[in-house]
Image (cartoon, rainbow, N blue to C red; front, side):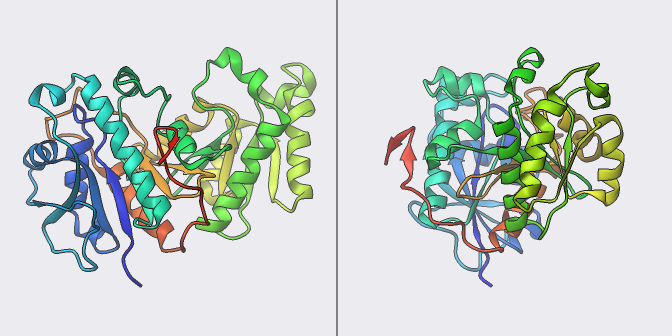
Length: 346
């Protein structure tokens, strides 16, 4: 089977993105299963190669994709910016860097939507600099949802021992109870089930967590379990989904990490990400479920304190690339709407 093309976004040029991309692509395990195409900046990537201490030659491809058999030691680059040194100083995010990061993501999505790439894997961005450049999105997930015309998406964090999906993502805890609705819980369960069936395993076993301690203790600590979560689980089961719950988070993860479940549906960000990162701090992968394209990412940020030091861990980037390749080998994504540029039809 032909190796899939993976569009790899360089991320924020002031952070660790370029160097972890360079270090990951120097690993023969990555290029043995895929044809990575970096979307980024030549100057930033050449600097990153030196920082990472790897031996790679940069070959610029404009409008093309890497050859069927990529040459060893070559980083194939789709150059989308020519940043000045001041625009990519380590640890100092800029509007120019934010605009460039935005354009890398848009182009990667277009390549996936057109079929030129089979998946995209993203390095971390700085949301403040992207918004400072006039691109008002909370992050990758919301931008990719708009670019692909997708209404419902789900964030999954995954490793070999544990997968978690989130009903709510970046929300203040005070807002979470009002956001945990029947429709939102059921949608998260459904998208998790459908995506796991498509990309990871047949007949997935899902654990659905409670919102409150001890599943609300019969209403003493809250009623969301009986009024919202349990009915959503019942509806999912009626549709043929193997979903169990509501289950108490303080005990469930022990059984999930031991292999009792294929994924855990969590009600809020830290409920899922604390145990996930306890087990997979260096190799966790962020996967956006529900999109018509494959998108994986690192599970960490720009790490400005490490940028340029060569000490940034590459485990998550490598894992994201490998997972993208594995998902791409499962087959082409379903038919999709036309690509959009910054929320407008391209």
